[in-house]
Length: 439
Ligand code: ATP
Ligand code: MG
Image 1 (tube, rainbow, N blue to C red):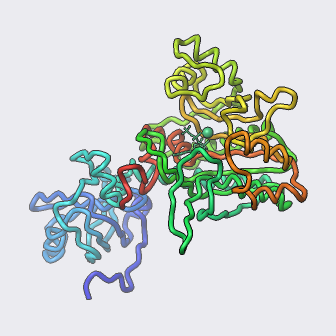
Image 2 (cartoon, rainbow, N blue to C red; image 1 turned 90 degrees about the vertical axis):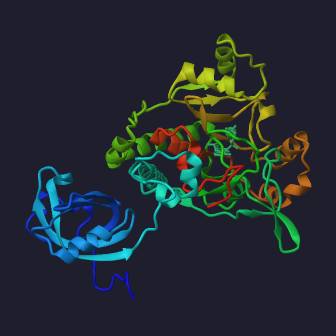
Image 3 (tube, helix red, strand yellow; image 1 turned 135 degrees about the vertical axis):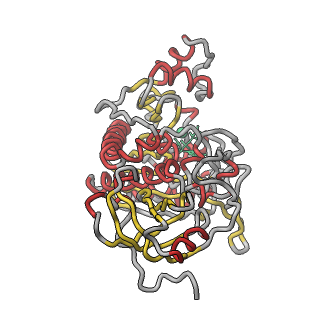
């Protein structure tokens, strides 16, 4: 059978092929990025997850059958090449490989559905249709390398700060909060839904005594938007902690993001360079602006926002202009926040809810939660919802529920900030939007 690895193993990644290994035999494995045939000499660039390495084959020094095998290679095929490394100042990393043996592991059909070397630029739809090829581009894989580091840092942060990682169900019997559209599914013979948020579960976990929990998991929203910042399936980074309030949890989020940005700057500098993105380390403490102050700023900038309304896109834009960078938007009107948000004591028109913004992009919503059973029932009713639909959730508030607070951050929105991406689709491997359910 052809194309088997057998006892061949990679000895060096492309990035490990530098002048230090000159004079030794190496085996590299990867994709054929480029083939240049000048008759008497051939250059083949091999690409792997770390970068590129040049194979140089002068007909005077390389067997004719190897030259023949090189000539038959096609772009984006997967190969393994054994050869001798030698110094070559003009080659990437100052080294080239003189091939001795070639193993074709997988031949790529031609023409390719898109060109991963970007000599021909493809639109976002063509790219997403062939996402595996698209991700072969270093400026695309860089986004997912940074996103991975972001999750790594976030997990480190939570574990270092006493949060337990949890997983809650995504198949749910009823709506979390009302409002948002849900995807209905058939659960055997019953109607069920895909979860829009782990909100009710992480709150029930506060009644479990686990004290501080976090979850990184999928959320599903059947909203028919067509914007650069909404997906129908996203990843949410959720945190909830007991015996704390909204201000404490804003501080947690603030600290977490300062750490994440520091880590990405330190560990993903190559990826940031590839993206041409400068990730500025924000001030230790993000500014806070109250909803009332925001309304004044927005109105003063010529965008009308009546008190008590959620921010329109235009309002977010002018506020983002004025504030810049990360900032917390606090003290929201209770009426436009969900039932589980704690109203201000003695001034119930306002609440202990906040959003974290980056320029005009909402990254997170959070709040102190209502932990008193009767107040929770009252707030559910006030929003026109039926408390009977919340039976198993409300039960957790009847047998000892500590005061608690929490937030949820959209992972793809945060990745947009970390990578400087304008379109949220760039930050999901296989994005789901109104138009797209494949691949
Ligand atoms: P927006 O007003 O921007 O649509 P939201 O207020 O409806 O967002 P929340 O329900 O507060 O969103 O969700 C918490 C966080 O989850 C948001 O701040 C955002 O980062 C992320 N998020 C929410 N909906 C989406 C979505 N459709 N696509 C991607 N991320 C989302
Ligand atoms: Mg929100």
